[in-house]
Length: 459
Image 1 (cartoon, one colour):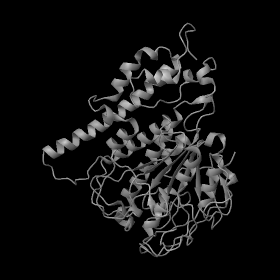
Image 2: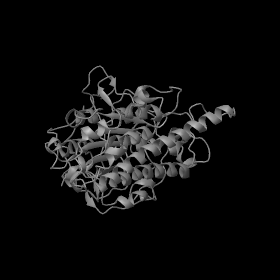
Image 3: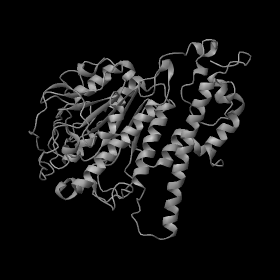
């Protein structure tokens, strides 16, 4: 609604035309869906439903993540292809109050918007390295051993199956992001991608923030303008007065978020240039780790907010990559996360710091999504199913059972969260994926090796 009845009602088409043709999508604004606006009245509808994933590589430290395992002995390395089964402390099957372990502690602020899911299993198909199937087959739609002439139980993944239904009205049906900035290609694509169009056909992750930004917001077509937000704001200023007071605030907040992303990328580029000029010997793939992960997460959320995509995934790192990584702001020297997991006795404190940081980065995105208003009094988080998870339950034992999973959001009112769900032994991960598809309104009776759905999290 506009605040001035004498102003001609603004339409989304007229507003976008007033931005001078800059390819910058906008978030939901009430002024574009006013019932008094005949052009937009037919488009007034429920907010879009979104699906997103936040993937943790190389498993986690169980004693820091799982309730009841704080005194669990640290396991010994169990070989790459000798997938181990955890048979330790057992939480009773069913629903329990949330317990915030040291690793999960950052999520306490979002306790009503998440559920911890434990006890879910995957089946490792022998024939590859255990890490090779961890991410690549995490979202797979096929049961183990069903793909003939392939060592991988890999077919079209959940993100693309969901996008076939909820991703057809956005510029990008899916968005695949990765925080692996290494350039040495030490592993195959199976260690570094979780999204697949089909068997053998990877949907490659984008990992350069500047390239992601250019793709999302079309800045390559406006290279003579250093700052796209200045260009768009300059041309849209006159039309902005036709927005409601609430929409003006939302409009300013959105452009400020874009400007913040630009400024952070500029700082990263500047630092890299200064390092090169000073001839400081650092790995060529260097990028400030905490800033890098936060920035890629912000790009994912902004893409969901601005209707550029309804489906996205973010890998915070690759599986098994042994190249040392600089963890500025988290660890005091470069480490290989994968190598650390093979000797937790020597790296326990640092591993716990990394796990806690990854959960904190996920929490930060949830808090931002909760602050973004959408139609009908909902928020972006209300209209998203956002899952944090890993393809292995432990990076030392390479176990494929009892995976670490946190489901967040509201699924458009289809999810009821705020508890700890522990599943019966042998419950396949595919049950969670089938539940999420049904929550999105996608009719499907089974998914991969699913045995049913999870009524515990369905509203």
